[in-house]
Image (cartoon, rainbow, N blue to C red; front, top):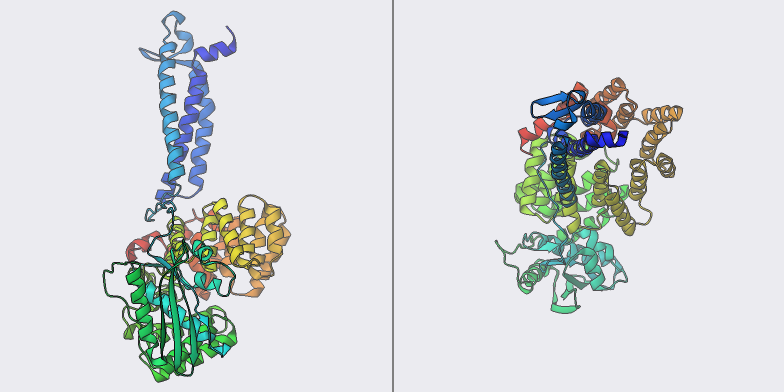
Length: 588
């Protein structure tokens, strides 16, 4: 009898197939279990190694032994006339079929539900894209400035934004965020095209003519699908009537779109017309994001608050401006965050249900104070008040990311993008979590959308490099990173350099980052990737002592994987306040 025939008779091939299918299932189950239990990545490698070692042992066993009615016996002790290998073959065939069906079922489930919750993450299954936008969805485009004075642009833009914010307070209405809606200002593009890009069914547009205290406001609500004007109105009033006009427009939108409100229609906050103008001017300069603009905006808001110290929205805007000023490095962070928190707290004293103020404080206590319990409370309350606020959703996603819940964070970012599809910061954040999850096709989509917003986007360049690196193309990643003139690029270059065996250049990158200062977490991540746990934890400690802002993001750094099974890792997470145990304590 040939060797092949004997292998077949002894069911060695069937046992091999059964073992391989069972191995695939065990690896899939182990992968889920490792995620759920928060076990280190080497656990999965160990499982695979043990299964690989077991394969030749099982093959030898299946050749040498046979199953008989009396139990296992050595094959040479069994007479061929009494052998039941044929019966065993049928049983093995059945087992293989059952396991294959389970394997196929697992593959289908993996396609349908690609994201399983990790550790203490909330399960967040992504819903399929709807066939079209909700009938109760709207974008408020910047109203056209029809005034003789071009400088009155601030007023028409500000009025549009205030209308948008007013409508966004209606939970039953989906309103495209300002970032996306205002990106079409003066764009030569049709209403249906704009609505398609913003994923809304209706568009509110209009014009403003201002001359002294006299204003003319025209507004019209358009159904995007056919361009039909559902409603339009014109007001010739005094500046003091601008708040009543905003209320009338909001009420008209609710009525025409047949929105059934659970509460009352929100109303614009009435203030002194001069204070209102100063507030709108400050919002306009905030969008310039320069040192001088921040200083001018703060001066204008202080003037507005000198007129009306109970103007909550002016306090919120002051908080936002100072936070951005500190975040841009134009003001010492500790001083800036303290001032910003004070301004937002004052806004909440005046208006306890101000979601923007809550979100501002939540962001500050998360990054500056590391008071995660307070951050969770404030951001959750802001979400309940304005569930359709993309900025609040972004803050909530960032918070989840800090605790290592990247899958949950990704689902929330996608929800935020459905409201603000062209927001660069949210697109970049989504690209980042896709990198952490090795979802490189999804990452490519985010990069493409960033380039649609800004063809020369630095964010897009950076994530293009990380995508190349994640896909194993270290040479391309290095070329992309070297084309970016930024210290973050020096940090990013260290990883492909190490993979390419260029250790001397890695050491040069480390020295550059050390000389720059305030780069403790980046330096620690490089050492961790090199397998130098001692230096990695030493620099993490330095980051903790120096108050490095990036310390709260360490759970999202894939570079720290080599040290995550070190006992000092969990100690550091608990020290920072982003451990799983702390997540349970604060109710995240």
